[in-house]
Image (cartoon, rainbow, N blue to C red):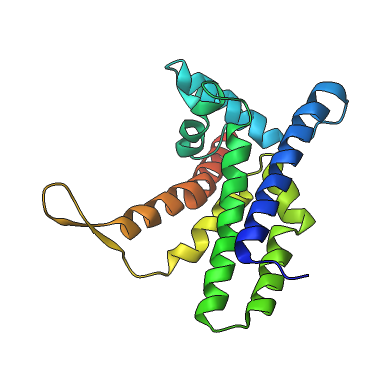
Length: 188
């Protein structure tokens, strides 16, 4: 059966949406929760931020402040906002796989199989739909080595969005490592 990249992406997005809805049901009706425990910690921190407090008032929050701010819509739109965000990042990785293989002139059939291997991998879709931000970090890494992309700012100067992106990746990936090391030393 031949699937276009667009078809694969749409089916994968619908599949993730169904899993997020199922996860909400499981969390409400079963003893074992579908939602990742870290997602609950991130959401609690986002709740504090939304109410004008510090995300670090959540005693177990040892992550980038950016994650707390990204999840503020959990309390404005829906509590699954972050799961949708992570699932979208997971789909973005599928898009990167497609683009990289297309650039390397991989035959379309093989390209589709490789993209499907990512999009329908049980680990990747389960990790994303339960609210684990590992997939979001995965979506940042392919951009790490790209040359700066320039765009024209309102004042007529050129700004590099890649530099801003690199700073964001550092904030999400390395800041928690540094904070955890410092907190471990403090606790000992």
